Image (tube, rainbow, N blue to C red):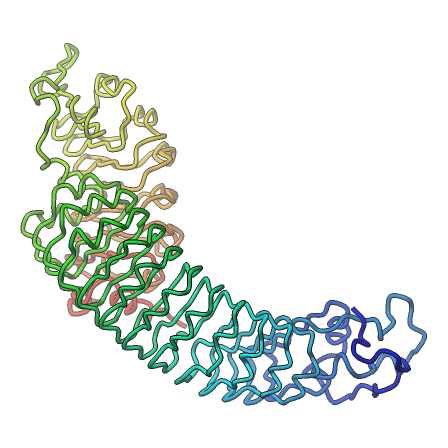
Length: 576
């Protein structure tokens, strides 16, 4: 790109002046020289209190090296160098920008986040090529109207400022795809936002919004809407017509009713935690064909309707901290990966089952569904090789529930007939609990491509063989130990570990942190003398149970506050 854009017909040296040498150590000449070739200049984290003139005039002034040696090679002729298109001056101490900003009209990216800016210059209107503007984490109280002139803008990041309003004409930014206004002081959203027809992602979280305009439904391409942490008491019914919506965040508001979503066929995640919702009805669920995540924690729900089974794609359901006393047995038909129930006055499911995690709860619910398959007496095989009491295999459980159950037999060995009974059936769960097993049965490897749930609790296992790592889909593992076997840390797919009522004396927080899928860790009633503070870095944990151990801290008052409070407490105690 020619550096003489707009000055055609002039002498190449006319209008230019020698580059000032006032950049000092804050902007090395080598950095400027490289920027003239690449069109990009990164000055982040240089403790700048103002932008040096040499930066604004990088495309205007004659480079210092040109004055020292005018015999440029063909590749170094300064008047043919690239215009600056990307300028990063984030993480400095800038309190203002000057109108000299207009000297960089070719900018497509301007990143000035994490400074101390209280305003933007009106000259910003002249950056007509700008596609991305990041002014987040500053002290902006107002935006200049001139910002609405940036018609090519695709990404505008204004989070963590002090904005109380949006300038008129904002809807003229019709190419805007990503807009972040979170963590400001906004009380209203202009109805004209509906004209932002290209918008894909809108973040309005952590403001003071009491309502959303019905016109917001005009954003036909919007996929991601975040309204967490506001003062919303209701949602406009028109929101239900947003056909492209995939992610909707409404946590920490004052919603009393769950909106209906008849047209939101693509909605994958609906986050409604920490509101005041009292009822969940069939009409709220029947249209959520694609929903994967439904977060209803910390509300006032008293029941869950049978129609929850309509959500066939649902993977994560958070019902913790509500007023739910029972669950429909049909919930067991869903293929949930995560079900949170803690903090509810459950009467129909024993706490010990809930503590064992998602798969155990679902199995319990399925067991309560009226059985239409073969009778129990028809579903038992007896073998001639072992005592009848040891060899009874529940074939019905294999065929109908996909469970290989050989529990409570007090056997030291799982007979081959048990594995032979699987034949060509699909098995997703294994229950060999309450036996006298000293090692994991080797034939368990035969089911490595389908089993996700293994219960080996209440045996005499002293070690875990590496074969367990070969269970490719393992997400739930119930064991009883004196020490936590190293092999467990290597099973990256694990979501639930239940090791309560053992004699475990320590855990490795660094290795637990690497287990990114782990969401439930039950360490109740063990011999933990101390809880390592680094365990607080396991931020993916949604349920951490530590009661019944001899440690002194965290105290019971912290444990009663729940998992998030425990993790925060531990993080605060990490040595710095």
